[in-house]
Length: 113
Length: 111
Image (cartoon, rainbow over all chains, first blue to last red; front, side, top):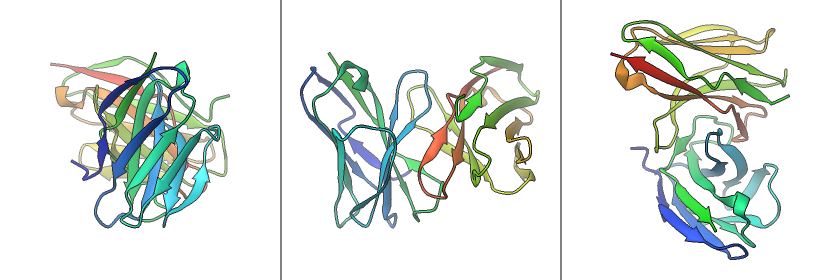
């Protein structure tokens, strides 16, 4: 157990809808990163939040957005869902921004029909 | 060329053998290197990290880094069936959380 919790664990949406995924980071960790993992692939970096500000972004369109709250929990929002957005969405917390030692939650599996 | 490349496997070894997992990366400026293990249906968990050229040992696991060859490997000694999982190589390019993962190598350890 990493202490990182995500919700919901599974959800099904249809094309064009919007989704919000939530993450509570491990106690004491002020940095949260979000990753997308398609079936059979490694995780892909979406973005990172540090002290409530976006602090780095991968190659994802603006319809992927996020928030970090004062208690370091975080949300990932995806608008105008596409079929290719079907994936496991992983939240990972770390102790410091520069730290590649990530502690992953169990993920939210999104299916877009 | 993918940023981080791994053989997808599956790699099958008998119990007690050494499993050798390999990874190459494209960006010569990459700073730090990680191995994550991912059981089926679960999230990745960190096994080891290595920053400097050479070997780093932790129990049955040894990570090896050769920056000149842009090559990282993970050796698992005395492999156990519980080691059966997908092993993800990850490279941290900028010393932030922008980790570039390979697609993973699926390892099966047969009793």
